Image 1 (tube, helix red, strand yellow):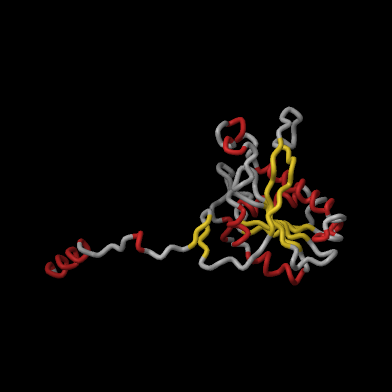
Image 2 (tube, one colour; image 1 turned 60 degrees about the vertical axis):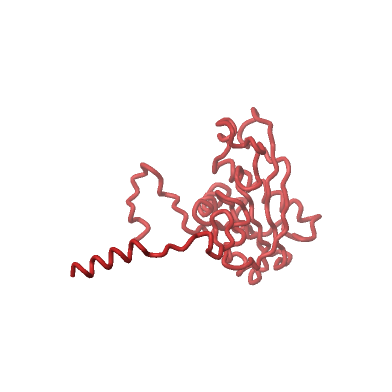
Length: 221
């Protein structure tokens, strides 16, 4: 027995550890591992003059909000599937939310992904966005939801002149999101029911916050 343990220890000590630099890399993007090239296509667009502060007249600064749109499956009167972007670069969410893409043809829907302020290329103060707490004070879910509603209004207003969304003035808007993005989807439906007709919120722990006294096993029931 002692001889066996000695051999085992010797083997562990001399086990060959593969150099990580020799591994075949997977394509990575903002925390997402992509095993193959994305089959999804979109055009990158920008919404100008988005207020940094939607709820005060004291700050008159504005910025550009980035979003992706695909209307390949859209037919006049079809819904707008709207992804409420969360904490990351927009490409990662667009490439990893296959459910929206998969069902869009069935519902003749337009697909829109909106980037969350202060993430990806949507930086209200450019390279200095994270430099001060004065700037970061505008990084909030409440402000982000107002950004998204402004974009929804813009898309519907453009419907009369933008052939890609012809007839979308009265289209239903269905919010999609996962994790924090799912929380945003649930909240935008709750706070702006006159703008968003429904929401699919995946893995959205809207009741689970520090000191909320919510049992940890609530989602197991």
